[in-house]
Image (cartoon, rainbow, N blue to C red; front, side, top):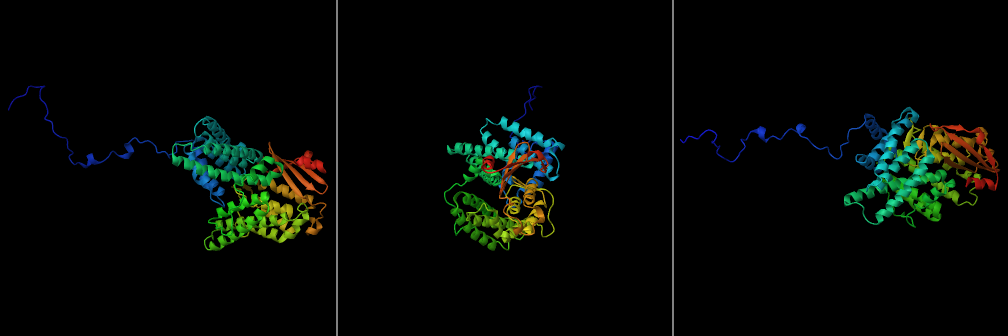
Length: 483
């Protein structure tokens, strides 16, 4: 055998093979592999932020969806909060203010809500020039409206509502020029979110119109311009597939009745038939307490519109006695409102409740103003004050004292029957105007003219009457003042 000198020995080359050892075949354990976080993984945050988001999913979201589910709040806002800091911070703010509302606490007891509110605003300014800046600003504005509502600042909420509708028009003009996203999937997602926010703003603008429309021309024009077509889509063959379908169609009828009279009456007739068919076909499926409450709320809407449409046919609509013939309907409406709140089964929840739909507050408030039957009016007041309710812009704590004030102006509880309340002392109309710095201006229309009162709204949404701000306005001067 040839001897090789040291340092010159070379190893013979051969193809590498695995021995079949299981250890070599096993991958590196996942725990030791450096992996990038998935896109949906929420980055580490302040524990208070995590707690606020948990409160949103456990408390705020179920309350927002009390009657009608909405993917805007259950799907899209939480999903976009993962990637957009301004939306996440606004969501934390919303949950924080909602928690303060449920506990009857003042916002000065914690700085978390205000701290994240400022963060959300700064994030919007930071992303203003990005491709998605306008969209993020638009969606954040919907959250800001809800935040101001929870803070009891109705005037600020209405201002933000007007600005959000302005942003919506800007987005619609921009997207009419063509898709702004490179991905068709992204574009369809944006369209879905924009459509849901637009529907939310429509419902809220209708609430604002019913609350302050007589004194706010801009809100009136916004609400009346939401009719997209010259004719209603309702017909004798209309079928509702969900309570949400029935709700959406009915809200459009409200605008139709205000804008085009008889067309709204015909559309309402079609709606009643479609709703009756829906209730009949779902009679064995809508049996849960939540389903029964939703059905009772829709029935409440129906009976309220029946009265309004019927009275609209009278030339003497300004005569307060025109409502006297509808006491039976008012009584049924109060009963429906009690069903919505579960008053009759003894399980009524007295905890503060927040949602974004038109609920029982505006209708009970209207009943107290229009119905002079002592028993019906008393039941409506008791139902109205049985629970603190924040239904969009309608706050039961803010409107209850106004309703009670009307009863006082009409002689208090001494009247045992409507005939005991003469037309001379009846309140014909109440106009409300929310101002900044938590102040509410009220105009009561009496036979002698208008009574103006200024009311200070405390931050806890309860009233402190201002004694020095009452004045009597008479005749045409009062009309000009209310405008």
